[in-house]
Image (cartoon, rainbow, N blue to C red; front, side, top):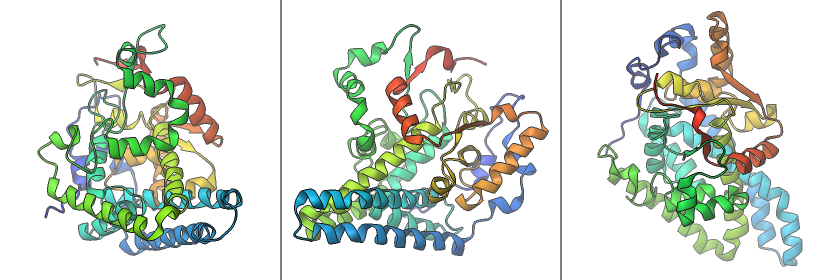
Length: 372
């Protein structure tokens, strides 16, 4: 079984594809505190235990309500705050499974696999290994027009509201027309239907065309997730819907909202094979401040994402906030702070609603850099 985990060396040894006006990755790393790159297993597992407890506490009332003899309408009304709380707790666990996928829970690869299978494979209904493989490709091709994973990009010609590609394919046009109701379901479409990177449960799609993907290990993850979900359905019956599925859709909303806003901004650009560079792509990521409470419960996934994309196998989540402050100071001293993108996003629900409805997956042609 292949349990190899991407190491920080892989990232820092990337060829110097970025133009000289950008600092190199090694230059940035030398300017940051070495302690930012220290991965503490005990500290990480403390976060895991806390978030599992948080999920149990916020989900147990849903089970109690679903098991009661109350009127279904009253059950639904009473469940509403717990739907939100349980879904947000799942989102917190998803963030820790994300760290496990990057090898940031522990220096021990086996610990990362166990935590990943628990947080993602079980609680979050996400086949850990398949997701880990596709997500690594997202990081290795961030803001590349064709090589980026997770995000679709459709070039929008000048003065057009919908691209020709969308208008000519019926199911794409339908997806665009129905975009207002899609947000809670897009993670399901991504994982289970496989748009755009391939099905994460079975070997179908471009993810699996890569011969480096460990298919056997990925299928083990799929089996773990399917077994966990099937067991819950067996014991919960129809209560599976209010206790598990609806909070999962809440988590899905969180995940898509955060991911979309991290990688979409008015001034953001895309690169082609002729113009792309790893550091350039990383600095197209947007840090967003959702408010102290939401930043913390999301393990600084939103306000420390630029640093995460620069050192995605090096800096654990509990060092992102301090590391981002250091990164900004380094850029400030070099006169390069303009490379860093930040937006205050306290009204995050309003922000995703506006951007998703106005922009969808479109990017203006003027925002694509074809050549250096």
